[in-house]
Image (cartoon, rainbow, N blue to C red; front, side, top):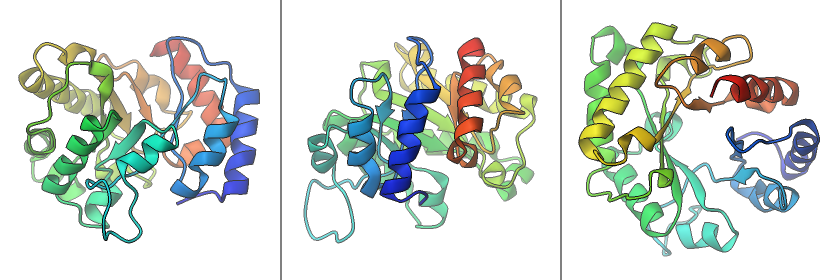
Length: 242
């Protein structure tokens, strides 16, 4: 919940002036709902993707304040984040609800960025792998995907989101490797081609060592993405290592 439409417009204009997107390393931007059309219009003709931060599982109905897949698709938006830790822990979204959202988005022709990750309590109790396995199995239950580009997994340890604390490279890699291993069981034919991102206080100082990890394909950038210069620097580093 950052940047008004006018602020998002200025940011988007400055971003296209500051980066030259190559074919291998992509930039996806997920503004708030009220800024989607503004940013989408500015990015027209540029190789940058605009996506939504959330979506409801139903196509329409008495769900005041919610946004549906058809609404987003009508705006030309076909990427959406589902299951972000704040949606899970602040707004109480269950794995069942997240699964319904993923199904609705995929069946509606959208590309899903599914966020998973453990809390500090879960990590300290040695349940990291159990949480990852549980979330992936429940959130993707019954979700059929043939094109690996339709699904991206973002592992974001909750204890490292907005805290300034970053998982050590070995912690990130072991978790990301486990994510990939679980994907092989769910989607054996396409698991190796599904992009896996690391999220959680990634910034220009720590992103290089994270991008170098074998099972990290990119980053889900939070607070650092609000600062244009830092976001551009992260992208430049990503172009070298992702």
